[in-house]
Length: 58
Image (cartoon, rainbow, N blue to C red; front, side, top):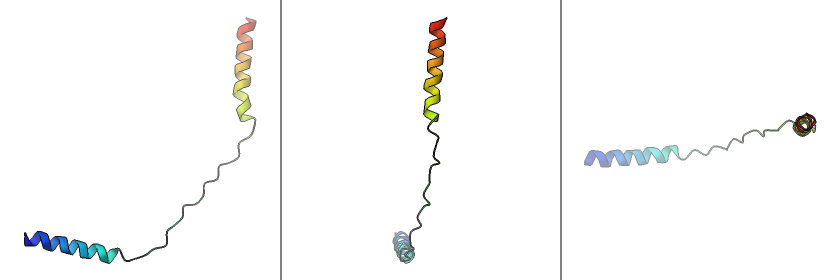
């Protein structure tokens, strides 16, 4: 039982010695998304319109 108490006391003492160091936090770099072209959202509806027009025509 004395060994467990000694181990607990040493672990608390070791933890407090390492907890004293204050380090300035490092900020993560900002991630900037690349601008996409405005035509990217137009292609899919146009293809859908072409497919529907082909289905109606046949």
